[in-house]
Length: 149
Image 1: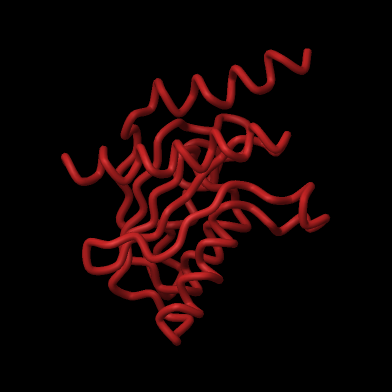
Image 2: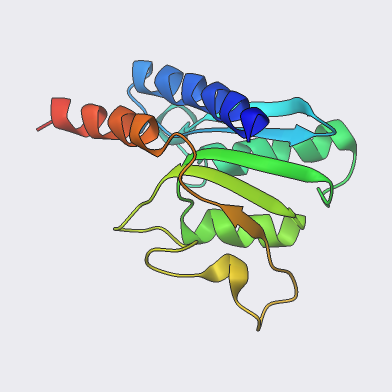
């Protein structure tokens, strides 16, 4: 659990950096063999790309680093519950474990709106640890949207 907190703090740094760039502040890091091999915040505006969510960017970076799109020995840390696109990408990448901070009641595809990662009809399921630093993760995104209202 201590390592989950430490890696989630790294994801939070990425989320804060994204907020500083006027992006929706979601951050992700991918850990393989105890080391961060990829990290990013959302970049949809910067890249003019609707798929440039932090999770997608990190999965792409990690696949290049490891030379394999199957990330079977990796853990993905994300500050906010992933959407359906990102959950689908995790299944394709064969991520064995996801750790995330805050739930997303309007679009979360892990536990709140949908349960894609645990659907037995799919060829891969992902172990999930929700709620790591949930209050801190939620505060970052809530503060971002409160400033824009």
